[in-house]
Length: 532
Image (cartoon, rainbow, N blue to C red; front, side, top):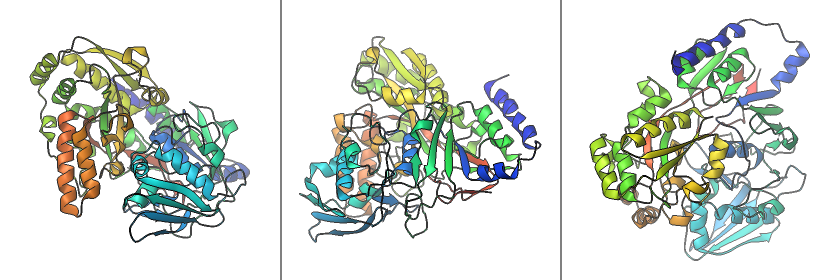
């Protein structure tokens, strides 16, 4: 019996249990209705949303920490912690004022000192933050409720930087916590968001718990992604870590959990057959699979080796390993940008349109590759990374590369990929991840496309031609200039291989039919979700 058949059979056992069982006492039913049990995409192994960029950390952080602005479903930044902002006529001085009534979970009021220190920590790790830092004259409080940002040149995308949904976001922490070195993890988890993190119930690998913050004052506008009023309708949210898809499927069908963020596509037919379960696409903007290479060390510090991988890569192999036989869930992607969005381009993407193993072997020989092991750090507790890693191991061997396959968990990948030590000394050569389509519509929030060396995302590519076009996009005066810059950017990124896109795919989410308010988007939005 193969893996997919086994999973379908094992997951189906939950359907029998879901149809029967003893009635729950009224008091237990009432308590259960106030607790939402959620199966996240991965284990919450660490919890510093500035130190790292893992989506699972960002998703949990959105409950605990609020942001100064929040992006809505039209990709527009809206005020969140901010009551008002003004910008001088020359675009050089921004002044912001907090909305009243904001409190941290320890009861202390949120002040401009907290915001300023949090923004300083954020900008040390975020590409847009670093751009602002480069033109910053001063970032300082004006009074307890206001702060001022003075620049040496205008930065028109300031509000997008402060509201974007890709990590790291502008999560605001108490000043004392925000003073933590941005390259070291925080150890205290106090925010001003709608939920409090229950530290003493956190068991990495098993459970993370959040309780409603009763002093949170949501905005009056309707909730829309990370914008608007974040009204929490349950008392408690429990994240239950279930790495095995068949077990998670059975738990959902049995009513042991309420919501599963990323069900395996192979199990969707079983879930759809259960009248107590609803299934839908989690995010219509989908995901871009990524084969991320370390540009600092052999063999991937050589562009010919990186191009050899791209030349041998067959996106269909990767996509079918993730989504199975459902052709509606994936497409080839000779691009770094999200299909169907205004700036999408395939300029320079021919290398990904047809696999050529012979040409790949020729490139590898020309590169001078001498058998260095490729340290593949592959998370086994996430279906997408595990399946992509299996495909990669075969791909690299097929063109004559030596593979050192490190099977581990996503939390370890998150920690190890931040290391700049050589691959044979605790570092890495490659890892797999994915990028939400919402993050890849333009360079503003697209951390993974940047190629500015030590300031770039993990892998640290240093490709001036890419950075030139990023600058040209920011400076573009109209859509035509934006499109021209993106086309040149895509071409330069393909030629130098910032990373290897493994294809575009959609994923499902599933939840019990007694939940209402579940919406689609680039992360799970818990506000507005209730449980009968």
